[in-house]
Length: 370
Image (cartoon, rainbow, N blue to C red):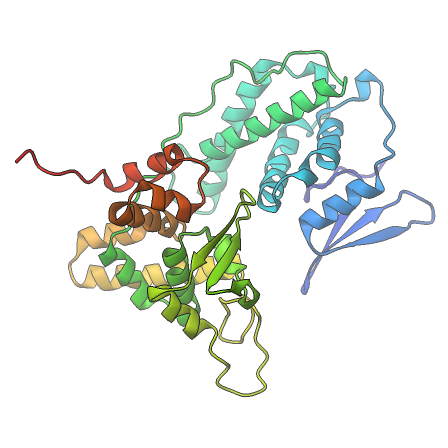
């Protein structure tokens, strides 16, 4: 029997990953002799989907062989491909942590009790804190709580999947187990903070910040925007998280930005990506690259503010995250044009969702008694 894998713990049985300088490549180990592998590409989510298609003929195991991993892999095949791409990637990361705990020493699914869910939540937080301390990072004590809640929710969904398939008759062990209390993010980025970071940002980061604020869309949706999404005086979106489609009229400051982003390359013949947000080399800007560039701009802005003795501004800059631009856009839109307009721009299903999203950021604007 081969040794237990120490990495790539989120990979289903038979899926292999090879890390090269040019990227990570995924393969399906067919289990034959001599060894034969099927290339599945470099995209994680796509590779898992192909793995699911190639292994659909799974046999039904006896109860004692039905482990958490066995059920989770069935969930990956049947349920995960139907979710939005972003949700798929999030779930795969969540599964990696669940496997660390529930597959370290595989046990029958029916042996998982509610107390084990509580133990998982506590272990998850302690593990996150331990990892942060090992890297020399500051610890508040609540790190990992939100992720633990999300992973518990996924485990609960997987358990219900098992019940629907007749793989267990036991009640969901997550029922009655309270997760950690979550406090919604309430940071509002005022214009001074926004401009401070914008000033120190490089050109691609500045473009991304302006496009995110003017459209009110999520970072991933902003980065994937391409010239081909511009049609009939509007820019079209299909949100990754919800798959909702919406169009935003190209006018005002957005029109000026789009004109700048679609301007022909200065050097004739230079190849440029179709995406609106590109690096200096004309390549599509990745989420990781944007995060690195934004953090660098934020550090510079904080340094400038500190040297100027603006300590309150330093704190505001350090709390500023790129994703806050969507909330700023919604809040500013609501204050100027009303909740309905903010709802439409953000792509929310109803105004109650928008109210929860924007009102606790800045506070509702009201008039005095007299």
